[in-house]
Structure formats: structure tokens, C-alpha cells
Length: 377
Image (cartoon, rainbow, N blue to C red):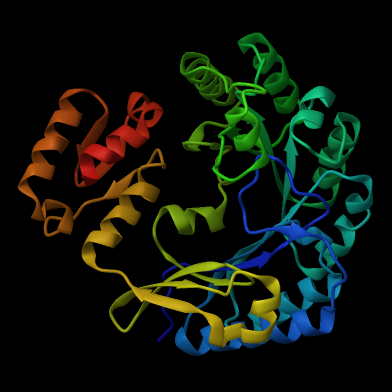
């Protein structure tokens, strides 16, 4: 019997044309690619995981990175064909690839669609030239706008990212930039507050006093403005950073946030799978050179206990406006003190619990880290 619980595949392409100063992903400067070797290893890994997940259909396939649109088209095509052969796709599958708004990448959009990609995610980050320079991007505002328009012509489903709370960005400036973004008529937007990740170039710059992050009050005001403007435009938030029209939600990311099963292949890719009654966390070898040698033999696998699963379920699920389900016998209730802290959060208006569905309120999502600390400590 076929298992219809959503299953996704994430493919990590580790190479970028340049390393952005805010990025802490597992990425490397672009280099000469042996496409045949990548196809061989990725296909072998997919075969390995397909054997562990029989009678499943893929709801989504996501090429992330890095900049997977820079991967040889043959690699993208081979992975899609392998997934079709090994699992088969559920009806109306979502096949997403991330791309950057350079003119060179725009030339590949039709080829990617021809290979089977159904959704394009553009790393626009800003519609301002000065901000793009600060963020270390290799495109300008004009190419970002062209890229959005080209993507919307080629793909039925598109999304693009913006980063706000940049140093010196006023509330009015954010309002103007977001208004311009909404004018494109996008059906999905991802709006991320600039965060300073350890080990990045931005972290070193802030530590050296070269510039300071935006203050908490301004960040909160810009977050609130984004909620108001996107809702008014028919793209209400369905997750802390993601906004969509009805039916346009990212099906792949919903797999993460709803704590369903997903397979990760490619250097450093993570996966979460229920196999034989166990919840497994998997991670591929991180360095591309190691990954190409070790492949499926290089995965670290860990069984997650109830406590670890609770942390992941709440950390991911409470990002959603729909929240997370707590069953009567849920491990959540094993700690009486946790239940008391939950009651206090409800009294403070930070979460609600209705018919077993735990949700962070609008105020709760503003301080979600503090809410999670109270629920999980």
C-alpha cells in the first residue's frame, strides 16, 4: 500500500559565483564541475534512500544551495528523472530551484522549465543598488527587476526573497521597497530580517565596529509593516518570513515546518525520516570533495528521542500561523512544569491552544525565540 504522508527531496548544490558576507550556508566558490561524477553520486544516493522509503510518492523536490541554477543542466535533469523513476511524483508535484537574478542565469530559465522545474525561487534580496552592493550581491536592481519579470513569464509559480532591517534602512525606505516588490504581482514573497551569523564576513565587520545592526524596535516596526502590507496585498503571512496568496504556499518548506519526512542529498544536506518506527536525522558529508568520494556511505545517522523531536516539532511548527498539533498523549505534557509555563504564555497572549492546536499569536511570533525557550527549557 502506498504511504501518502508527504515526502520531499532536498538536493544541495554547494557552489556559488561569490560568497555573500551574510551567508553561513555550506557553500563554496564556483569551480570546474565534473557533471558526470555529480550525476553518478547524486543518483546513487537517491537510490539508497528510495530503498529505505518504499511505496512513497514525492510531493516536492527542491534544489537549493549555493546556486543550483548554475549547476549543469544535465545534473538537474538527471536528478528529476531519477526521482520520477525511483519514487514517482504525487499529483501536481512542486519542483523548485533557487536562482540569482543575473542576466546569464535568466538565459537558463526556459531550459530549467523544460527539464521539469515548476517553481523558481529568486534570491533578489533588495531592489536598491546601494543595498545590493552592501549585501555583496553580483546583480544590480535593474537585473533583479528583469529577472522577476522573466521568471513570471516562464514559470507558473515564482517567489523572491528580500532582506530588510539593513543598517541605515528607515521604516519609510522599507515601505517604499516592499511596495515596489508587491507591484510585481508576485504570489509568494520571502521577507527575511538581516541576521548576523557567527563566522560570516558581516559578523567580523560588526565585531570590528565597522557598522551596527538595526535596533530591535526598528526591526519590530519593519516586521509589523511587512505583515500589514502583504496582508493588504492578498499575501498574508503563513510563516514568520513567508507570505503567499491562497494556494501558493511553498509545499516543500511546509514539509519542514510540519515535520514531515524529507531526504537530503548533496554536500552537508540534512534529512528527517520515519523508518521502522524511529525518527532519524541524517547528514551527508559536508565538503564536496568528501561527498563525491563517500556518497551514501558518508551519511551520519542519528535516532532522535522524544525530547529531541519535541524541540524540532515546536521550533519548526510554531513558525507557522497554523501552528502545531498537540495530542492528548503528547510528550509535551510529560513535564508538568511545561504545562504551567504554557498556561502563563496563554495568559500573556503569546500563544493559543484550541482543539489541540498550539499557535503563536502575532505578538508571540515577534518574540518566538523567547516563547520557545519557555516551552522547551
